[in-house]
Length: 86
Image (tube, one colour):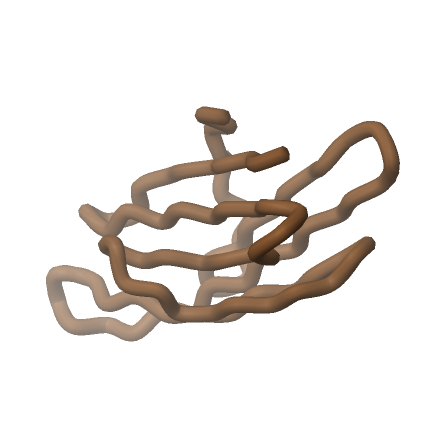
């Protein structure tokens, strides 16, 4: 089963993918920034740069159980809304 979430922050596209077989991945502007393989919960980290070249930290938490998968994303410690596209 594969799940994908996306959001845009200051013209940067953040995509989080979860696949039971290949693990969890964090992409920023189509570049892989973190990869983990864990059965029940994962923390992913990355960074993005604004138009003024300010560096912002991305933290993602994936929570899994037998019936569902959840995803929460923070940019500079502020929660960002995600859209689940798959």
